[in-house]
Image 1 (spheres, helix red, strand yellow):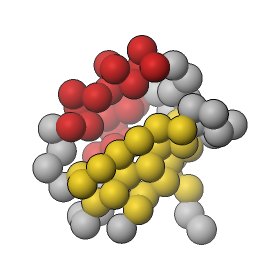
Image 2 (cartoon, rainbow, N blue to C red):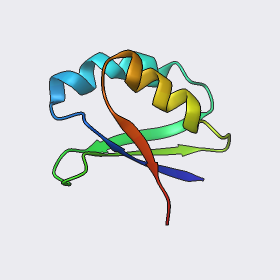
Image 3 (cartoon, rainbow, N blue to C red):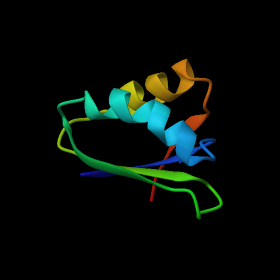
Image 4 (cartoon, helix red, strand yellow):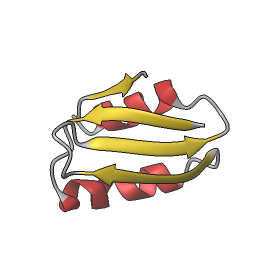
Length: 70
């Protein structure tokens, strides 16, 4: 399943900081940020419900993050 999040991540340096945290989550098949999108989208492919975990990780680094629903 693809999860889509609106975030406050705005730079490649911020992504570098978050990369180890996101890569540690075994349930994630793949992830990417779209910083060209006005909502700084984070897309995650995961078979498990990882929404709360992702929101917590980003908030631990002082980034806003909310899941976008269809």
